[in-house]
Every structure is written in structure tokens, then in C-alpha cells.
Length: 327
Figure 1 (spheres, rainbow, N blue to C red):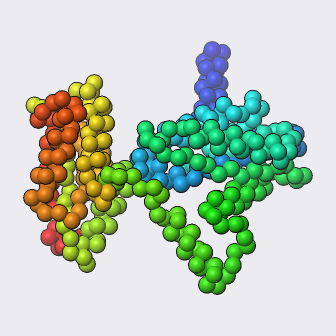
Figure 2 (figure 1 turned 30 degrees about the vertical axis):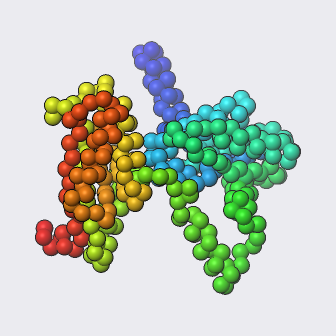
Figure 3 (figure 1 turned 60 degrees about the horizontal axis):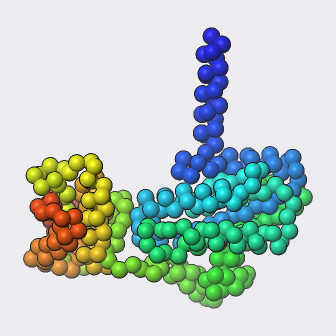
């Protein structure tokens, strides 16, 4: 009985620790970070909080996919663990936002140097196997009497936002009202929505984003005439079956690169299954489909040294309203 009780206690402790951890990076999650920092502040009445935010992280997901984005977040966590001292608290408190709390009295010079080290280390992280400048903004806050985690975080977050504004070429100034303020907002919106440094080739997206684009194009076709085709590319073993698991991963990686560079920047594609890609190609005729798929097949077969491994099927995208009436 005592052994069973001890095992249950160990399991409860393990589950309690898991509940404090971010599932992707295994750093403290937001709630656990706040609890740990508040406990440290109550004990020491000192400390430094750094808030680290990856600049334009959405561009990484858009350009390289969410799997690559997750890998970047995991590598950021490794960098922060490496830079942290034993008593420091490191947490992931948002999608691409991290905090580092140091329970020691420090000065502004130390803060600047630590922020510089973090930025330098993060720039070394490879993104999606390509040259992509990974940069981060770092906001800081030194302990003041009466502080808790939330007040430290709020000040550091404000400093982070000011740094982002400066890096966009605008000094941090009080917001202005009227037309001047709206003009500033519009410029900020344009910068945030625009794709930075668009890569050549097709637009690779996760399936959910592809689905949203698909539905938007359906709606657009109600008002604007256009020709859009959906193409399904299926990888096989050459005999009509799916390839062996041992070969599938490398072949799908190669096929993804081939599709990326065989299509235009205005085309969109996504991985549909473990052996299939979906393509949305615009502004073409039915006869152009054979040209596109032929180019993909030729490049793929040259890369892998095989033949008759790809199947392709297609259909024209219809306006949403027309499709609903036909259903």
C-alpha cells in the first residue's frame, strides 16, 4: 500500500510539473511564469524582467510553414535556457513572446548588454533552411518597490513597443489625434500587413490558411471573372500505392521544393496529406494545367531519379453562390 501511495504521489507531482510547462518549448507557461516571478519578488524584493518578442514572426509561418515556425520557437527557448542563470525564470507567455526574469539587482548597463547578447544569439538561428534574418525586440524593467510580475511586465512591454516603433523609423511619441494620427495608423497597418521580403516561388501555407484563401477566392469569383484551378498532386510508389514510409519523408520534402519553385508567386499550395499537395493556380486555361504538372513531374523525376511516381487531378474553382445553387 505504501508503495502504491508513493507512486501516486510521484505521478501527481509529475502531472503538476507538466501543467506548469508550455507544451512546445517546455518552458514555464504564462500562468506558471507569473506565479514563479511573484514568489521570487516576494522573497528578494529585487530583480530584472526582460520581455523578448520575435519581429514579424508571422512572416516565418507564412513563408516556411507552421512546422518551421514551431522549430524556431523551440530553438529560441534553447537559446534563452543557455543564457539563463540557475536562479533565473524563463517562460513563454505568448505565441512568439518570451520572458526572462533575473532575481538579482542589476543596472541599466547590464540590461543593455544582456539584451544585446539575446539578439545576437537569436540572429544565429537558421529559419526554414534558408537565409532569413531572425530579429527580436527586447523590453526591460528593473524592480521598483511595490512591483509584482504584472507591473514589471507592463513596463517592459511598453519599452518593447517603443523599440519596435524606433526600428520602424518612427520615434516613440505620444499618439496624435485627428488626421495626423489616422495617417500614422494607416502607415503602421500597411507595414504590419505587407509581406516583408517576399520569397520567389509559390505561396506555401498550412491547410487551414489554404482553406480560408480558397473560400475567399470563391466569394471573389461571384463579382470578378477569373480562372482558378485546384490541382491535387499525389506521390505514389509507381504502382498506384503510397510509397514506403522509409522513402516518403525525403520524397515529400523534395516534391515540396519542386512545387515551390515550379509555380508563380501568385499561386498557393499546401500539404494535404502525408503523400499529397494541393495547389491553387490562378489566371490560366485548362490546357495550362498539363504544362504546370508536366514541369513539376520533370523536375521531381530528375531530382529523385524515378518515373511515374506522381498522379495529378484538377477541377476549376466555381463562384461560391453558383456552387451553392448547383448543390
